[in-house]
Length: 252
Image (spheres, rainbow, N blue to C red):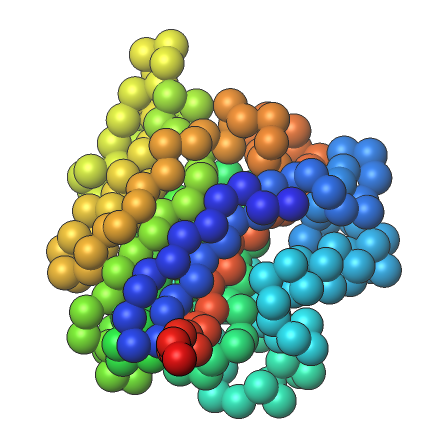
């Protein structure tokens, strides 16, 4: 169920987890830990997978926030737990200052970015595909976090498709490179390609965000993760970030 976990320490610690495709209830091409409702899966099975994830992460009451992702730059702010009962907001990033709420971003080749300033008690999660990265979703999310009081933001960049595998038409590479030159790359066969995760890392650097971890795992190359490039009919795994107040250890 879990691909990897990280902790960003601070006054209140920020926890980050990335799921894999194993250990859930979905079947067929979506087997088995699909977390997306928009890929043709049985809604009850997706709900069961999400409930299992919340339980494993210790998010009581299934306090996971999902958004309807559209490759844009809209940032959703969670101001109260009551918002989790509402229909998913159309957005490609989320931020909050509330503890015990997991901000989830679903991907299957795009780049998931988990952000946190634990000392300020602010977290964020970003879905950065090619269009969103080029349009500025990273900078937009960092701005929202700083508006909430974040000053020392740390980032964890999760698994995504690597430039060896993200072959694109030359015109598309040129179009994206005109906006973000670092994104231009070459595939394993020497054809035009894009490095979205590399461009994301450059954008974070420009925003003075510390990158604590940059995953080397390629979704297309890893059978443990969903990949749209590998199988068009596929599910979605997720990156989740949440704040958790640490209980001081006392000694007699």
